[in-house]
Length: 177
Image (tube, rainbow, N blue to C red):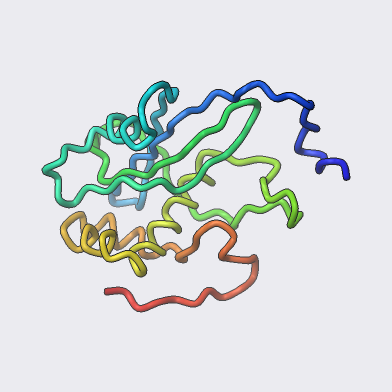
């Protein structure tokens, strides 16, 4: 069976892809959630270590969170994405996190969408955090510990993880707290 048109046929021997660790730093202002991305190649360290370094979150920060949310493979590059909050540099240039439709390919055997924009990755991360806010005690405790405006805005996103929310469906919402 040939691959879908937006996925190139794989040669019989694949060279190793470049692996990049990306961190989306989430902040909030009077207009809503915002993000900025930073990234570094993965070399000889665990991705969590690289992500924590990129996020610049000190260990004593009780309201800080670093969580792996997704990965994508585009053009011989595997990007492992983490979300971090709050952004330690609130004055840095950022992009609004505007709600976007849930992405999918429409093909159950080739789930990668044809195009993934940075804002799509940020929205997915916010949906993922909204889900974890309701289901993960560590994330829930972090949300209670600080950054109330940030978490209020995150909680407004429909909680979802990859593949858990179909178009035009109503998700099952769990109680917060």
